[in-house]
Length: 162
Image (cartoon, rainbow, N blue to C red; front, side, top):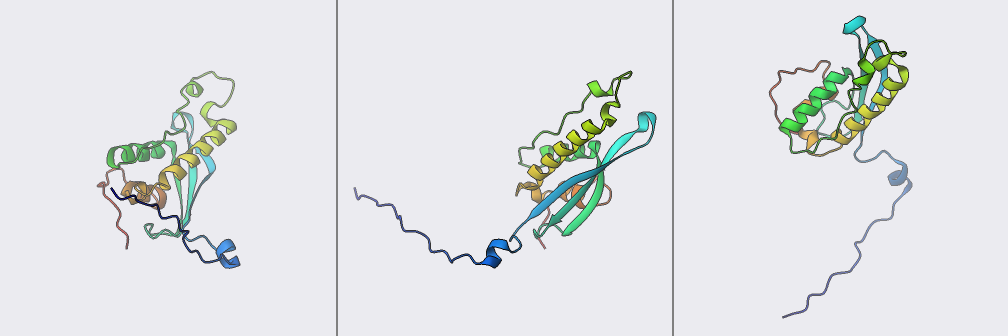
């Protein structure tokens, strides 16, 4: 039997210049969830969040977009990704059922600290999901991030690069 010797030569790399180090990144995807707004009254009251996307990834048709989404839209996205993709989908921040009970001494799910905690959780969720290369091909993710309204009767499919 012939002995095999591992190739331990180093790869040749070009030296990095200032433009490479401090220039725009080659590929980036930034998603911010911000500006929560509570709308409605009584049982019809809910909170929406601004979802802002900036990217140079060719798979996204818009390089910048800004849409408003509510928690139930995030639940829909998670359900679609679980059903349609091969991606392990991270959990959403909890529903906070205890906070929805009547006769509490605070604003429940409309309390500022709860809304901020949920906003952070939703932002983490979206960044994990959208950062996954397989999830980036899902039409539901593109619709969620870039379309003004979510068509929950859409036909699931993969997005193809132009």
